[in-house]
Image 1 (cartoon, rainbow, N blue to C red):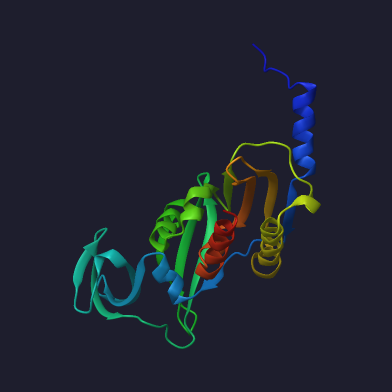
Image 2 (cartoon, one colour; image 1 turned 90 degrees about the vertical axis):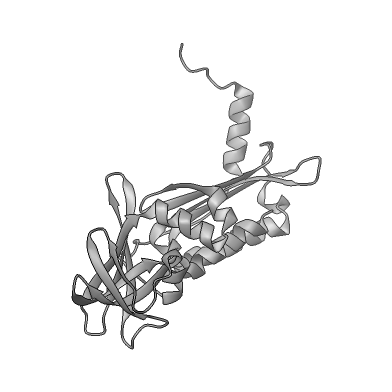
Length: 240
């Protein structure tokens, strides 16, 4: 059987929703890498350590839950590590960098330590979605966890509430919905420079709860900046 065609009324309702789906977006280049703070590395669940790796002086990471301390000697994936220092701050001129690529149809994150003299050390390579979900859970970012849809070079969030109905035009939007559009636009314009935020609002249900659909397409690399992730979490939470 062929797919059932939409009735004229169904098409009219769909077109009405399209005409009243409001968009904030910008499309600059997604950066090849970004610098993050040590705070972000901690937020993802890692400690930054220095010591011996396979007998050579190096910088490396360990899962925070493993609670590695000075003097610990352990093996991981066939390599021996000896912890000499747990870093609380980066040395002057040193940087933490992340790069996100698309490999085998999924996003992959690589984190690097770049010393002041320019030498880079790969800290870890992980599927971006795996790290994002663990990081959101650790930080208590419930809205990001709930709305998470897919992750590659960009990550899509979809937050839906209630049944669909007749979409409101812009002049009918309540103040908190207009504020969400404004704040999302500001975040895209000032911080991520790439992304797309959409909002369609259907009014309240009989219990007085808002009905809406929000989607947000964010460069995956920017979600590893904990400040940006926190802002998106708060904006999604403010809609409820």
